[in-house]
Length: 592
Image (tube, rainbow, N blue to C red; front, side, top):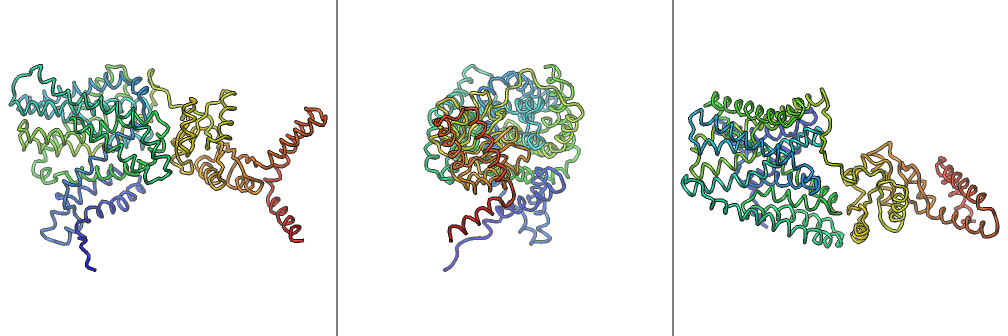
């Protein structure tokens, strides 16, 4: 049977996967940010890299990307998924607590940076409209590169990290107004401002209201219905639908897809599906972000750098210095410490991915001359390539003098500060949680049955839906900060897996597990359980306690005897080959 598959149609995909599977691991081994690996690979695979050698060595074209524009369109989803994941880590309450940073520091950064850069542009001969358009584009920074750098360095919850995220969040909010203003200016041919222009923002505002209302009404029932099907594939499909669907709804109303995905993440952050969605989406986010960085490298026009080096390098250096100085000055004005202000200014001084979108639209509308726009895009791309190095320098500043926490820093989620993680929220897990609550010990539960999770949520308990046999899910439920883990699942195999995974992640953690019988308890001790409670043994001890009291033995003596026997039994289970010896004798007796 003849095949109609064209190998050439898959070349770009294969090159990207080869980059992710070969180049990036090498960069990790060399302790270099994988972002630089994707950027360097993009430069090499793009039309301005190895493709230039195609005239002399045609075989080189087999290792270059043929359709960079198609890759760029798909790569935009990387930013969408990143903003969705950031939204999942927040909540409306935490966002409310950050309002001073978002709408104070963030708004000041965008406004003052735009004015300063526009003034510099006019100083070098640009007219008001193109100078304002370019300044607005360059005032925005790269969420897609800055946030992964901060997360990799574990600084996203620090004082500087929270302020940096607040600025990036306001920048994402500002994209839609900037694009709408450009469209209005381009269509009106530079007419003076009219109050009627404000009506152009109405669809965006209505779209955001509709997205929030739809999300609050339908997101949780949708995921609950899919979770009851107990299919990982269907749950994954539902998660992808939420991310891409929210992005498309936002885009249709004139906002950015990334902003719509961020709102969807915020809405899901307060639900029981939060951590399972995070684990499901994480691989897609990682791959698509890698594709985004690859596309940034591909778009770097090295020929323009070679043809006009002074202009390109001067514009790039000027942007880093001017924008960094503005952000540093604003941060200091708002009474942030000098080191924290420098930490914020360094990674945010570079350009961002939305500069490509804004300048491209400005060129198509005739607001910015094409030659000037292309020069700006190349300079912005060069500054983006410096972000990992700027992030490294920022981290060194953070190590010199760790800044104090913000006065208004939002509290951690309850799941992160819970001292006990209860895996399994059936009858046993509910009783354990009730006893913990009676003694004032904060706890969080994880359960794979959506009905039990819903029941716990209605009772006001912090219960998350998800598969606790996966290490990443346990991490996101707060295993790294927990004082103890209680495993109450009724599946012996699942209990063993959770104990083994948790012990590997936290060698110092106290792990108490429910065992089916003595043999199962011994197996759990071997896997690293601190204590295993066999159901059969505990039932026998409870029966013994009841009957001894009923026949007149003093309660105090009975309780002491029960505790003593329980300790003896625990020592027997922990003694090497003790259970195995008894088992062999029992089998011999059965055979006789």
